[in-house]
Amino acid sequence: MAKVTLEHITKRYEDVTAVDDMNLDLRDGEFVCLVGPSGCGKSTTMEMIAGLTKPTEGEVYIGDRNVTKLPPKDRGVAMVFQNIALFPHMDVYDNISFGLRLRDYDKEEIDRRVDNAADIVQLEGMLDRMPDEMSGGQRQRVAIARAIVREPEVFLMDEPLANLDAKLRVHMRTELQRLHKELDTTIVYVTHDQAEAMTMSDRIAVIDAGELQQIDPPLTCYNSPENLFVAGFIGSPSMNFVDGEVTQNGLETEYFDVALDPGTIDGLSVGQRVTMGIRPEDIYPVSVDEGLQYPTNRIPARTDVMEPMGDEIFVYLLLEGAQEATMGTESRGSGQLLMSVDPDSDIQEDEEVNIVLDRSKVHLFDTTSGEAITHDITTTPVTEGRAERGETGGDA
Image (cartoon, rainbow, N blue to C red):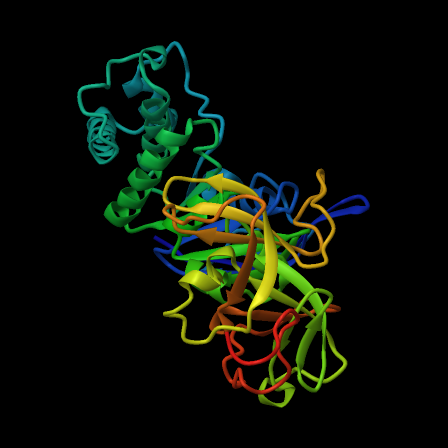
């Protein structure tokens, strides 16, 4: 086991900066996922840890060793790639032991390590099989066993489950969590799949355009995102955003207002442009908001499209005064919200509804900088300030 430290790591390709002044401190025995959109620099960051790519600037430490100039074989790391890349003419035993045989380990040590790795990844009795006789999940376990026998200080996994079907990915996520507990080793895992990152990680490092945006436990990234990018990227479906301006009485948007006292929230001032964020599960139809402790006033809307998901229904809403939803946009358009409701809800398409937001789950971000201001506006009594549009006054 070993910690991994990146100090001011930068990687430039001519006029393109793939990773920009990255600082990471990954603890000994920690499972950390690097997540972000395609091209954000997460794989490049892992390749610099592995030694496959040399940083333009900065230093890489594994444990207490500066490995910046060391080749991959001397870094004490093992990688598992998206492309499993087993030797098709070798059986499982030979595939797993290939690296050890190249390093001239004696037969007894090789057998010990292969048997131990096969036991960890549950490949007992399969060592004489050929890769084409195995399922995708079994082949992926062979690739993981091939890394385990190296007994590395750090495991590096670059989207190892991306080529598997959805059901097998879920199963392999569980297998990797069990593997981490059994080996108690440091794992750096690259993925764009939020479900993988949220379920497996001790911490998530969110990267955008080569820059580290936030590194925190999964629920911290979900509940307290540090900026608009993290708020919009973490969570599926993504957070709803509505732009507005702070007034003496609260937040005024194009379609509704939310009462709050700017003086009770640090970093908030009258006249400031802010973006309000609210997750779909924190929006409620008025008919089911009885148990909500901190509701906003009622907001009129109309249901547009409904998507039954089994354990919940996603309801796309058009706010009063909003134009019809448009196709082809990267996110929900202006005046559109996504709400999650129970599967037994009696809400229908093209129905007029009133909704409320959970004030304890309202996020405010500075529109200009994108930085988070607050993740809770319950410091302001709902009875203060003017009511949301569409209401005559009073609380929801």
